[in-house]
Image 1: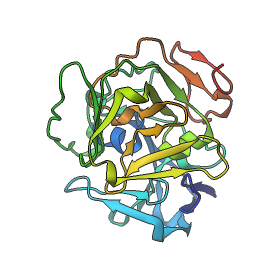
Image 2: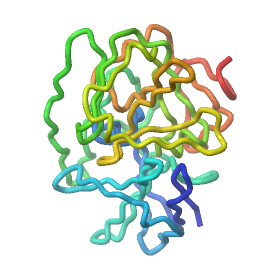
Image 3: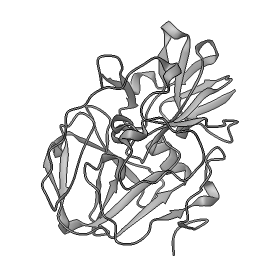
Image 4: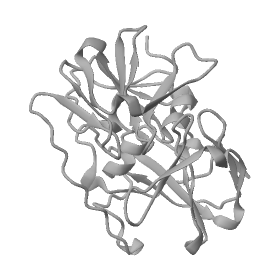
Length: 282
């Protein structure tokens, strides 16, 4: 049995497997819900899945006519989706604990890929769903932004923000906290100066969760849709922006780096040319 848990540990489950259909999804809804460059999912037989606790903490958001997205109301981590009609459970792989035997098969919805993210591995790529899935993507309304301003919003659009200044740096973080917080292979965050950032709507709708044993680590998310949102770190004078929430290219002036690669998920390979640090960047 493989166990999974949200960032705060309230939502817990176990799944027997075997895992199949493991994919990296680059659609805009997954990026906004997880706050990351892409989300990674795997399916498993429903009969081998069992909740261990925290079902009362799960909130569901109807993201389209066909589907809904579940998340923990305390920490915002994405929860599994049970599809009883197909006898399947869809697992956000970033929340699985320990090493997982999970060969990822492909990239999907690369036609919606973030403009600042480059796919550098050799896995097959599909513009939307693979043909054998027999499904079509969901058309989303175009988001209006202002020229010269970096902007972002949550999945439901009720929370939005703008940034007037230049990015400080971009980091791909592979620590276990980030993987569970973003429910993804890794978090990708951009840091901006506090004075350059402001929410344009919906700030009162944000939930904030800080790990009790962490000095700074915390996440912010929309309590309606679960979309990961920027967290203002006033004590450090900057804002941590989850790149999946961006609606425009952040135009980061310096190359990104990978940090905490010593904690990297065993099912994800780093194939780009960016500098890597076993722990925190010095």
